[in-house]
Amino acid sequence: MNTTHRGHETQIEADPALPTILIAREFDAPPERVFRAYTDPDLLVRWLGPRRMTMRIDVHEARTGGSYRYVHREDDGTEYGFRGVFHEVRPDERIVQTFAYDGFPDGVSLETTLFEDLGGRTRVTTTSLMASLDARDAMIRSGMRRGATEGHERLDELLGGGPSKNPGSRSETEGLSS
Image (cartoon, rainbow, N blue to C red):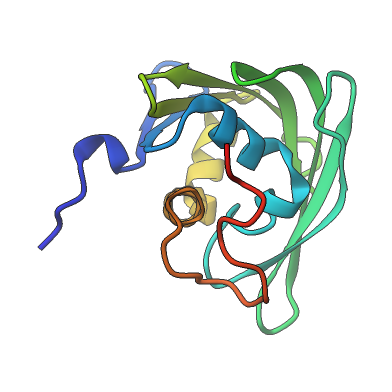
């Protein structure tokens, strides 16, 4: 039986006429805690991406003008690198960044993530703009739906103090208190 509140399901929409993907999810935590999970590399590595992969962060300067690069790794050693530049970081409100997959370096997208205060809860909405409908459709076929959904589930666990799904000695909520 699925008792998940509708707002706690990751919603992913692709506009048929525009090269965009909209991803939205609500979290039972205030914007400052959710924003911190998006910008603190020690927290980000604990939730971003599919459960089956581990994550290494090479650089993560979550500030206007900063950059990032991280790698997801399969158990068999296969790696997938991602990189981008932060164009705007407005604490607890908004992040605007580019996003590129090393395997498709010409496929840079522009992402805007908004953190909406719902009175102790937060709605996170990310809109990704790609260069074309084909690029958008390739992104969807790449498995991003599973990665986004599982990442949001892991973030929910991190914010709520649920059981750890990741190896490590720290508790899931260490360093994330208000």
